[in-house]
Amino acid sequence: MGEIKHFSKVDFSDPRSIQQIVSAAKADPGFWLMVKEREMERRTLAVNALITVRSEVGDTAAERLTPSIADLAAELVSRMFGTCSASALANIQEALLQAAGAELREAQLENAGDSSSSDVDDG
Image (cartoon, rainbow, N blue to C red; front, side, top):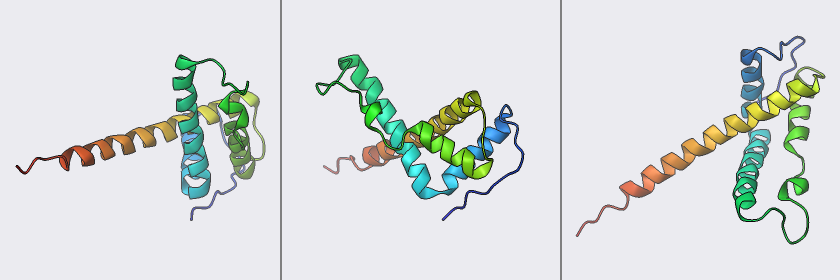
C-alpha cells in the first residue's frame, strides 16, 4: 500500500507539484478508489443533467457524496503540506478528477478491446 508523505514546501502553481499530489493520491489505493468514484459520479451527474435537472427527491447526487471531492483533496493536501489556498485546492480537485477520468477511460478502452476480440465467430 502506498504512503502519502508530508512535504514542507510546494509551489501549487507548478504543474509538477500538482502531478506530485496526484501521484501521491494514486499511491494510496483506498484513497484513489474514492477519487475514481467521485469522477464516475460526476460523469453520471453530467448525463443525468441532460435528462433531468433535479431528482424526484429534490437534491442532486453530488450533495449526497461523502466525503466530497473537496474533502478528499483537502485531506490529501493537509497530509502532505498542511494547508493551501482555496484556488489551489480547486486546481488539485480538478487534477485529481482529470487523472481519475483518464484512468477510467483507459480501462474502458481496454475492456472494449477485450470484448471485441472475444466476439470472433468461429462458425
